[in-house]
Image (cartoon, rainbow, N blue to C red; front, side, top):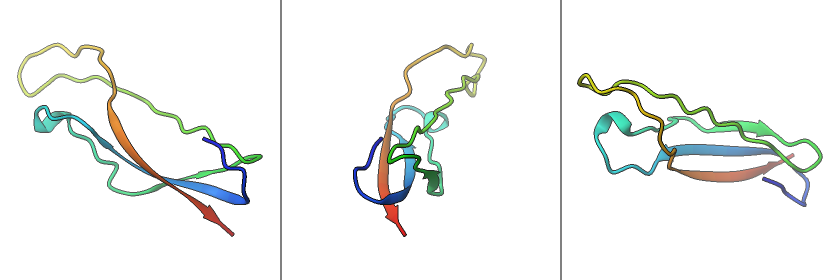
Length: 74
């Protein structure tokens, strides 16, 4: 993500875009601040897999999410 202006940070809030069971839903709950360096920022994502509420094996899958971003300025 890049900004051509004078922003110093990017604020992001993320939540899942899944219509599956409650266990698959994710909400960051709080906004996360990422510092810009030379007008750009890398936002890392880590996807982890877990067993469901039953005895299912954890399987790799796609991470689907919505994100809301805002640039902050000094």
